[in-house]
Length: 87
Image (cartoon, rainbow, N blue to C red; front, side):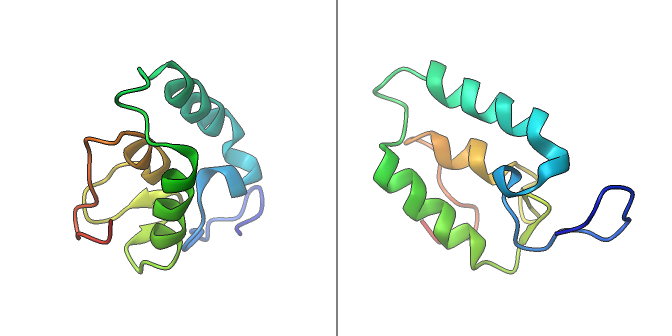
């Protein structure tokens, strides 16, 4: 993880793991909590998706370099899928 004031990028980190990005992660949690149950990915599947993102070389600083999304937001919805078909 990059430290505060550090210009390095955090490769293969999720927003929830980056202490200087907690405001963004709080937005992710609110977004996921307000999704209708039919659209929200169940917890177990959500965590499995994020685990796959963590092992992907396209993950950088909580963002997918393939599509530009925050992976935690994309993984939260059942009807949205990975742009490189990892889940």
